[in-house]
Length: 351
Image (cartoon, rainbow, N blue to C red; front, side, top):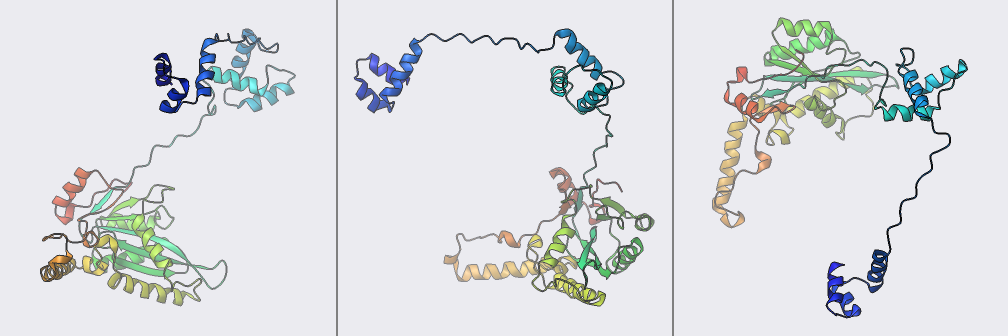
């Protein structure tokens, strides 16, 4: 608009100025006419006849802040006063007075809870951190469920323990943990959510007796136990996963077959397309060397198929040297990677 005004002031016809600047002549004329008119003075709003005077507003605030009503919301105060034959103002007026005095908030004393510690776990080798959980499997009839107890090594993704029972119980969880430790060694940390079996006295005593650090997810936080949750999703999204299991034996058979296939045949994207068994038993490095040799031979035989002479290994085949739950700061991860496996599992939990 300023350019249009400058052109008009230089003697350029309005039609040409409009074509050069893209400002319609009607718009320019309207704005020029508006600029020539004096700004109207704002009309003074009359004071409402029913507005409370200062003394009445002070009475409303004093009433709401009295010992009797300080913990009650205005709606209750309004009703109580009417029952006593008193009226100091409407509910809207009470809220308006409170708002003017910065008191529109929860007036009752509420329980405060300290913030939950975020569990931060790092594993740089197999056998350091186990994660476990229980999932429901639909039984043969409505309302009948079986409980699948599954424990996984977060570094290798290897299922170290799995069993199905007809109920959830801390003693059954203890048996699974003892069997897993006997087959695969005692971990440094066992992580779980806050379910009744996970927090049972039986499990707590077992972990304390063998010197295992207990780590728990925060309440109502879905991503504090990602490895177990991802494992259950993989299992339940299989095409062969039944809508219902015909019996406890059927559920146990299915879980046993799934564990074998997952551990020894499933190529996991989180561990460089290795099977969990390859990583768990230390075979992944040799397999990586074989993969690199095959890529190098192909590169030499067909260099025209590669963008450079030295093509790095595809990212999908890379393995992260650490596995973690709620990624700690970078310096802690680097420190953990530099230490021997025996001291590389870190935790910030309630254990």
